[in-house]
Length: 327
Image 1 (cartoon, rainbow, N blue to C red):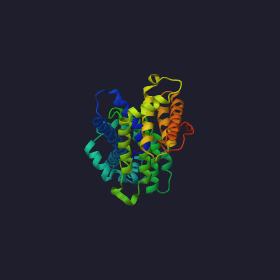
Image 2 (image 1 turned 30 degrees about the vertical axis):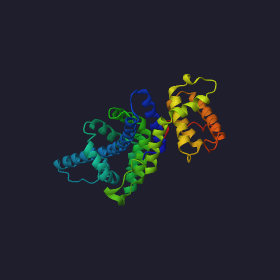
Image 3 (image 1 turned 90 degrees about the vertical axis):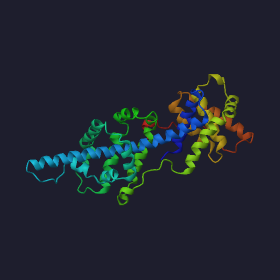
Image 4 (image 1 turned 90 degrees about the horizontal axis):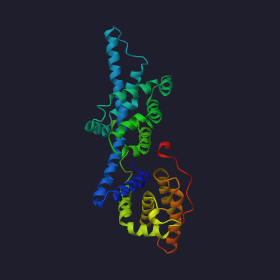
């Protein structure tokens, strides 16, 4: 689940914090680094569990409706009732029965005190145009049920300010991770297969061991190669004193150079463009132009000296979407 885009962003955040907290050792910083990924994965499970809680709310409402009808002498439980349609949603039933997610929810019990928000989200669902259109279908099969949940999550959960308020109270890392986690929740919904039942696998924390090793190596290289990379930055400063550079810009360039020097298989242009995307969000408006120019000059010089054997950087790619515009 955790991709290299998120890894690079987290390296920038934690290396920046490392220098701002004097006395922190590399060992402690590395533990905090991987702890942050644990929290990212926990947010992924948290957001999936929100859908389960919406389903549980619908089940309770449906049971209350049936009991009330029976008291009034009306035994007819069939029909198209909103609470019944959500309670019997085949995808939500499968998600609620998922073994991996169930183990997390049993341990955390995150939503015990959040029922007002869950109720509000449920009402948003049943009042939405997406749900009203769903009710007009002739057949409510698994694919239709899953697509209803996917559209609801994308439209009403992603970028939901109420969700942002909730997660702020749980973890410092979660707000920065929302746009990535939402995209992977949507991917998870699309990957679910009815035949898998409760054994449907969720996304793993890392796609493979190679990405985990990339994260560990990059974080260590960024700090251990500080002297070397900052000398390169100083030598390639143009029309600007090193001490006057924005500290975040120095960190971004330091990590970019550490990656270029430590990972010969990754094209330099790919590395530079990844860090320019980070600079667009986390640094000053003019930073991307300066960072790109300095790294371009440094890479050309390193190639000439035979230090690296990578292609030249040909300038920044078009501005990427901000985190809130993605997915």
